[in-house]
Image 1: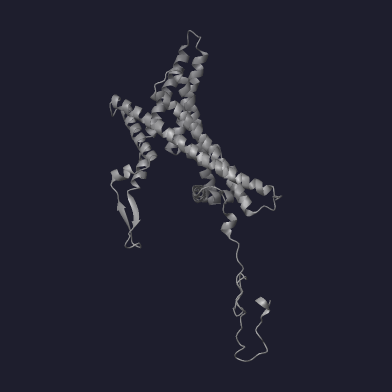
Image 2 (image 1 turned 120 degrees about the horizontal axis):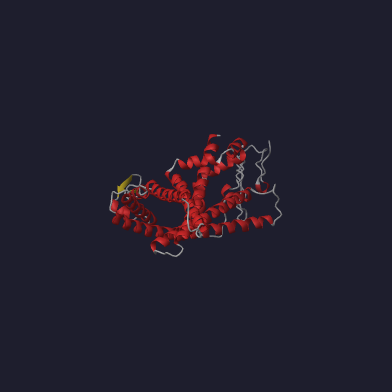
Length: 376
């Protein structure tokens, strides 16, 4: 058994048997000493543990807001991080993930109304672009065959039918923002007199509607206007009412697109700042001569976080490009621009369809990977 060394060389006397020597006579208090141990203690003091938080925490030279963003992302991506770690560590899960086919992802997309809308949009605007190229090629031809005219008539009818089908698929989209507004009616609060007793107060609907976030209200009004325009196309409302509702929906769409661009720019600015901080810290650590095997846990954690931020920035750029295409498309309808109307609307519509479908495809693929990792 190892012996315990006492400060200042004082040891209890083993030879003395008197009562006055049975207790340890402590040395005078030394103010310069940072710690003195009680020699009569049955257990030595514990060795101070290295703080896990200090090891894994980010020491950003940024504001508290950026740190809160990091914690929020960690909580929201907790399940996906666990799934990705299992995919990397488990070869069985990785093998199953490699066997996911594009048809499987599209099958999951088609099961949702949003996925069917994206599929119809791709077909619709691909046909519109084909019509543009066909008309450009056959522009100098004075006479077209009956078969060609019949095919063109069928394609125009298909484009109109797909547009109407997409409008019906988007019916009742106002339910999502409405539930967000209704969720703010029940607000829990603690009583000042009795903090242990928590109660809920139900706000009036108009009060919750007025205090809802502006993007949610804009989405709600836009969805309702779209439904009114669709009901007019179905014949349930007058054409005049449908035209007014459609124009009002276009204005809401333009405002929501502009708001989305502003939010996207702010999010990209925060994301770029976090990337710069991680890159600077990793560069400083690499200049100290650290090898791949001698990397600390914090360095590996920073590398994973940097990869996530880079991937997030990539999809933020995709979202920005899609919003720009939408803004150009809706501007032609609102301001009634006629110059190059058909080519611009066809190409911007097809580009927006491709970008939004790519985002939805990646989301459904990630869900499939997560389900495979959880099942493994």
